[in-house]
Length: 214
Image 1: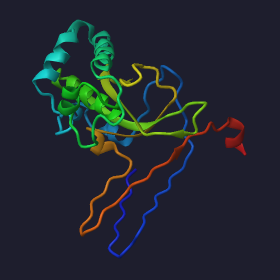
Image 2 (image 1 turned 45 degrees about the vertical axis):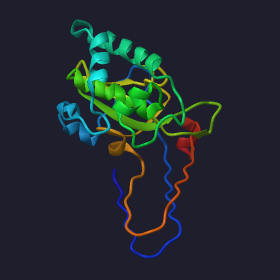
Image 3 (image 1 turned 180 degrees about the horizontal axis):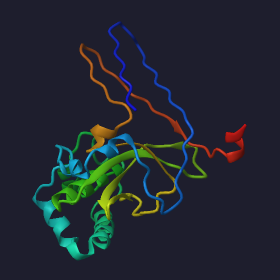
Image 4 (image 1 turned 120 degrees about the horizontal axis):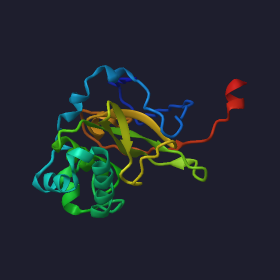
């Protein structure tokens, strides 16, 4: 679902609010069908400026990849990538590419996902960017998160590189795309002078089955 907002009058503030109830699949369930599933997985072989693999990324991907053990290789690639690029808030900027982050050898979930996508696509494996949140029992206020989905065994399978896990039964998917710019929750352009500051806040709470029925 995509909403487009156009403002051509003077304004000082824009507020966007969204809320909803999300059903989380049990661990091991297939990822549900969505409208873009009508697209061939081969669409997600396409590189973007944020996910282009340079020489060092290609060499890193090929070092850990064995075609006869594709899934095991990608699990290893995920683990080795996190060792190569420890989680480090503030180390990169939102516009930094996979090659930029890989050269710095540190980054955040967006960087981990971009590099992993670059590796997969360099290996000719379809992979896409997922934006969303991770639910935690002890944290109502959460930050945006990102992970990858890879086309394996005729279905999309998830890889959360930052948490080095395939178990995503606490993950809330918002959008998928070729990269961050394809899947970010809010994106805009403007004409004219001045500047802007964006503030975000997200809250995730468990919603009981009983409450849903009332």
